Length: 357
Image (cartoon, rainbow, N blue to C red; front, top):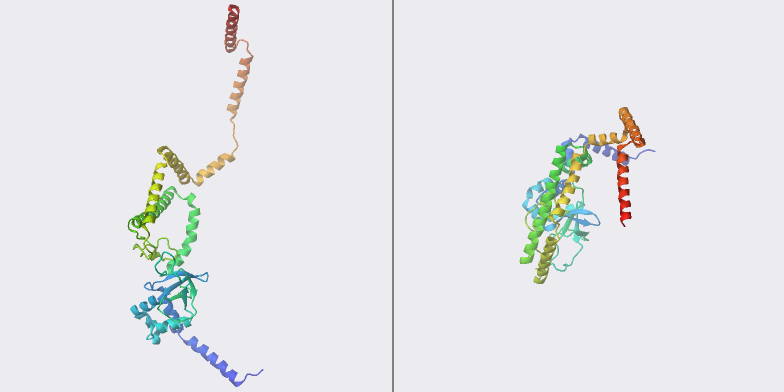
């Protein structure tokens, strides 16, 4: 088969384009990458753009609001420099290009009605669905990232540390005693800190709710699954978006709390029971801390070794046995005489009692 002139020209162009691409330095090849892809990665990694996690078609996605995106680019125009000649585009045009390139997708909330007891819709819904009109809008519009976020270095290091920590937990019984004490005190202190913070958090919330009817949560994201590490320990209380509860419900909760505290106080274990529980727990902890492979191997060796009897002990026990039989067979045994005398005395006493009667 012979190639036509058009096919030959097409082959020459393909070869020439491949040569031109190979002749480009590595720095210039990096610039060939889509600038909007780089722009989307930079915007997503920026901490000033507020975002949350939600469920979209049974998949957890990270999303942001349209008005936040608009305000973010207005406050940080330097990010537009990544776009090169298209940096003068408006925010709406940039967002629409991201939508056309499938870097983001417009979503809408699943629950569109106000739930009972709330004044307005949730600011950050937990469930989303794809919106029919894929056009940018800053009026109660949500946009989810569609590409996989680049993993930071600390997550990579953490992924390698997870199996190491797991292996260390399995090898905890063979740790030295000082290392066991260090791990024990650290775990107990950490758990005590977490439970104490949660307890005082509940106490502050309950007191303010009963007295003033306000819902004030300190550390509002401490139990949130979708919060980042920086948001997890945010101290500022969350805003109260629900209506004020009735005084009857507050009074009922207060009475229930007082009754529960009184019952716990009345049926608390006494000092003897507490000492028994403490002794059991301390014995368990001591067994774990004092266990070592040497003790385990020594115990196994003692169980495997058969009992060994000494020859001198055997002879001495045999002599004592023979002496005991000779004493029992001797009629002049003083012990037997004493017993006979005692029996004789008892018999004589019985005879005298019978004669007197």
